[in-house]
Length: 141
Length: 388
Ligand SMILES: [Zn+2]
Image 1 (cartoon, protein in one colour):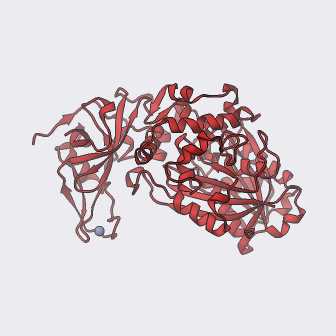
Image 2: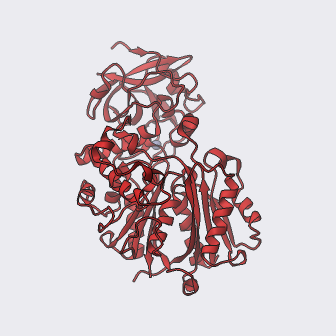
Image 3: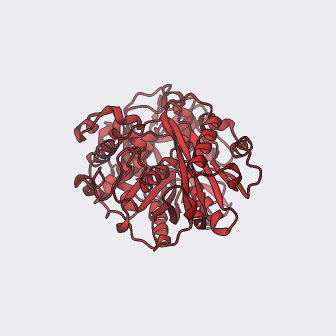
């Protein structure tokens, strides 16, 4: 499937801070992949990246690419942006999605009427490249 | 009869607003006024707890409890501590003080939190970094109403209701606020559900009137050993139950977006008090947004799931009702004093239970529940109070 790239959404002043724990996730996103941590001890897939597995506390972790398929659990449309300098225009829908492989993630859904983003909606990952890193967002499947 | 664990002896409350007063001075004035209300002197105090740095001016006071201790000349304490649990700090402070009294570590603990909530337009981005994950949530530009909105909307989806049920809480709390002499929102007059629904949209299920009003405020209270209750100038109000419930640190990790740690904290507090949620006559519930009073009434077991709105529609939570909720107007209408916000529920319950309400006095206020939490509905603390 072709990878969809988005642009002009992130605030260049408010980007994720990249470190050794999370670099794999954000570099994969720049290449159009949704990578999360997988615990090699107990098999848990988890997001966001942490130095230890949040179930068994093993530090033996690897990066695993997921399908990018997800379902909206809940959505909230933002009309009043959280800070004045935010470049993107409101309204936009912030969502919590359940990735097909299990983990939960906070993100946005782009490319559709914000009011159409409702629980149960099928979405797929899209990627916004900002410099060397990427952010995972979602579009209607 | 529930067993008293500790006893409230006196209080003070800062009139909420834009006060233009130094942060430390607000604490000192609150502390002195609360001791005076309790009929106590500096030498009577052997414990001091305050709420640690969070935002605004508080950041410059890493050693706030030491500053207060020194300024007030408290030189022989058995306990001195700054606690930090966001909006839950103040009930956590009450919990620590209660346990210190129970264990004999202290006999009289001064608890103080006067604070700041800078105007949102000045602190938007910094405020966000406190309440969501800076790397995995913040870059998507949710606002605080958005994060709360996701939880509130999830609850609405689960119980099959619409945002108009939250408007009922705003309307009811405004009924209390209009009669309260220092409530910030009093001047706006009574609201209708339509008015609340028509206010400009902010995020998710929330319009402007569904959000609390940032201000400065707070106050102090003094907690003493129950065996000192007989000598107090006011009716004794005892702490009879406490509970906590902590389920997550960030919204992303909430196991179920429509359920909170209030289930655990409430059950624990009621069990310790030996009372049923149905016995409660007065509730002060931390209401940063209009969704909270309904959600928390249900999470605490004062209403069945999806049924809290009926308490509002039948008038139970309004002046004259059988279960008054947020009787000073709550954070929504009295004012949300940021670093001090969580103390307001305790202070209002105490005023009601000693017959000293500044606004409308509740007739039957012998058994009350006070509930607050920190961050994104993360750190829940429930306290049950009994007057005798
Ligand atoms: Zn594991």
